[in-house]
Length: 351
Ligand code: SF4
Image 1 (cartoon, helix red, strand yellow):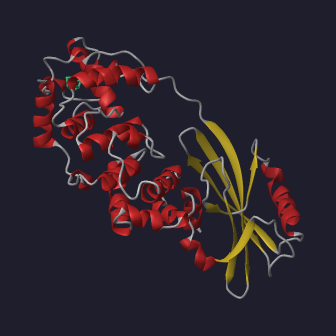
Image 2 (cartoon, rainbow, N blue to C red):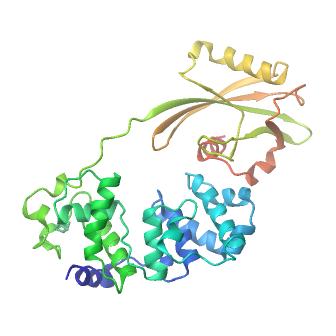
């Protein structure tokens, strides 16, 4: 039987991971949110840090959003951290600290999609819901030679139906872990050893010589460019001061701190760049800075966006005579306590 075969393989070769030693739904939920769009090696240290810093869902709910964002710093996709925090508060204040224990009620948590709900339901509560990630798509598409482009609702329903027939109803958690590990460790995107695979007799893609054509990917999403001009504004009073501002809602990096920014539709001509930046600073601060120096130009890749970020350092002798309301001067030494994007972190590390 398929389920027995893959679970036996998993018992011998499956990965040892810290969140697999527990059936505590809070820890499993933490690990699943951290691992969305994050490699296991990177996610592991964040998971251990979160479990240590917020050992219970109450601890997470009692933290401020800024503290949670700071703990998340470097992982990217910060909406995951905000949703995690909001859901922890919902569990503690609306559900009296009791973690939801049905697929539907887990799915209703902020930031939890079908994949994560199925993972928590099966790993923590032994409920028979199949998890479908990229590794599972690849394995099932090859085993059954499915040409439906993956990543669509239609594909999800189709693969879910197949898996509902295959899942081990007594051991759904192990079955799901086994499928994901087999897909990632054995049935790899390229170069898998099909001749020695435990499914070589059954796998339609292998029998028909189409392994490399599956799964079928959806057509690529066009990546857009955005142009960010960051102003690193400083003076001493008597300690070194830097100006920061918090990002608003409805865009990337919501709630994180960054340097004052101008975004443009297209790159500013290099011959005009310094004049334009000087003019911008004069409008903001009401006076000319003592000195300006062009800093690095960094490229930052997001899933559907490429950010081209030009930095400029702006030096004043004293606090300027005015400043837009959303900008805040802080002591340079406080910067390390603020949640910031990976792009700003890269810039500060390069200084
Ligand atoms: S035979 Fe090859 S393609 Fe088929 S499941 Fe095994 S490793 Fe994957």
